[in-house]
Image 1: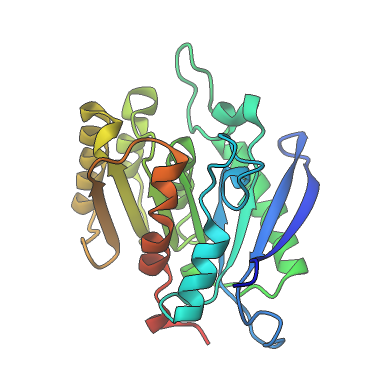
Image 2: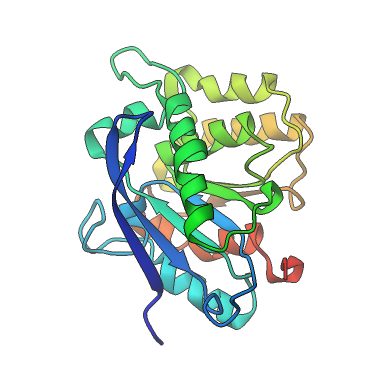
Length: 261
């Protein structure tokens, strides 16, 4: 099996965040062979953990997104999708990935990060790659605080993001502010959401995520239709656990059956 088709854009500068970071872009099988075809795009946070064990938070422990996506697309169970990994900057990750400022923890720059994503990263990807500019198939995802960020921005901008993956999202942040936000937000159209949590993340964490699921159900999401919830037995809060959920969430968000060809 050949290596995934990855392209790195180093030191991508943001005027909104006043910093720079790397972007890594995965191109699906068939991208080069079909020069007139456009592809949905999935944006994932914590980009250094997705494709390469050498750059991941815990060395050697990445999500294997490239190999998993290649395999599922070639097998015909996931539609071809461009995946953009946006690196985090370590020391400001908490600030950029959280919607509000919390006592002692800081944070609260997610709205500024949204400008970086929507007004800087997305236009760049549209310019450089053959993207299908359709909000219904434009996705965003992440784990932990990256999952919280994906839920917050996805519920705030459902007219931009139609597919969301929240793996072990930190919905506990700042006294579960995301629960209140989701309950109050007029989310229209409703994005398709993958939501999960591992049972080894702690009983309180599982309870908070399940309570958030219930908020979505009260807002009209339906399990098995536009919401998938999974409680993963024995899974902890780490890259190895999330790597095992890449295939399932890709199949839920981008099933080949509804391919956009």
